[in-house]
Amino acid sequence: MDNGFKIKTSVFASLLLFISINSFPQNLDIRILRSFNSAESLPSDRFFRFISNSNAYLVAGVPIAIGSIGLAKHDNQMFRNACVTLTAVALNSCGTLALKYSVNRDRPFKTYPDIIKKSAAGSPSFPSGHTSSAFTLATSLSLNYPKWYIIAPSYLWAGTVGFSRMDLGVHYPSDVLAGALIGSGCAWLSHYVNKRLIIKSNFAASRGKQESF
Image (tube, rainbow, N blue to C red; front, top):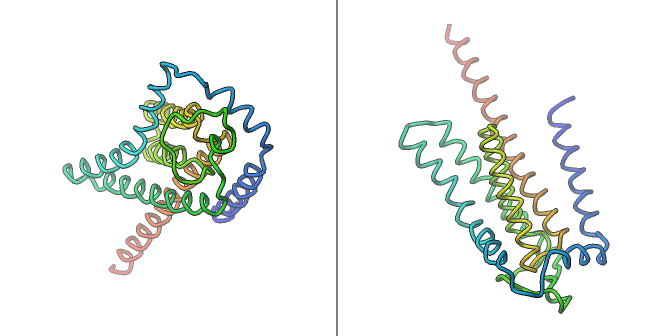
């Protein structure tokens, strides 16, 4: 099966899934959220706030650090990986922001007074921006460095970021699920385009060498 067809099929399936998530039964969504969000101030809330706040620093800092090391070591592959990851992050940010204001879903604590807001939250709820960017980074790292000691901690951290947004009362479960799918999809798309560009570049280089003989 053609790779282009696979990508188109995956995108179409993802769009259908996003629509179904957006029509997720509200009563089920809020029931799940209530099981995670406590009216009391718990010791774990501090941990989840820390994890949630770490998102912005790691999403920007990790690819910049990889790119800097690549430049210092004259490692073109490391530098390219950093650029691909930053491209995925930028793509995810634009897509998530556009979807947020298109759907314009209120935060759960605005709709349900019993949901306690334990973290800052300003933009519309769907999808979760923290979750989408965390899964963009985790998926990009896993694709660029497919080792268990990279994949396991990356997704553990991303999953914890997603859970933290529910524990802190600022996102519904469907917001988090959609964010994880969007972030992972943006990372896959960026990785796929990069691979295609490398293949075309290598083909052009080898063709040029053949013509020079």
